[in-house]
Length: 117
Image 1 (tube, rainbow, N blue to C red):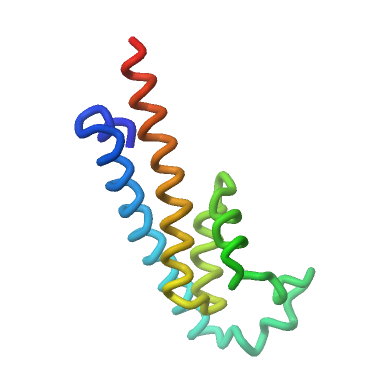
Image 2: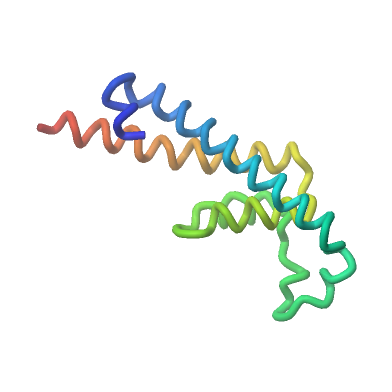
């Protein structure tokens, strides 16, 4: 993202990285959906330990905030959203918000750092 920002500018880099990350998240979402199909997850959902079956995965706030956790946050949210069958439109717009914000931070931050020298 920083490299693209130096060549094309931060706005273009934000769009490229944001939509690229959205496409990657959609692949993970569909993988989660396949896991749900294969394992018949709905039968076992309420038996999960520690109340994991009651996670508010459908909540837009959960989808946005949990995706911003560093490390495995985005992957976890994508796969679990597929497993829990979050509606596609809700998943897409919440993913776009978080990926575009993250991409903008890197693009504009990197662009500013490079132009300081």
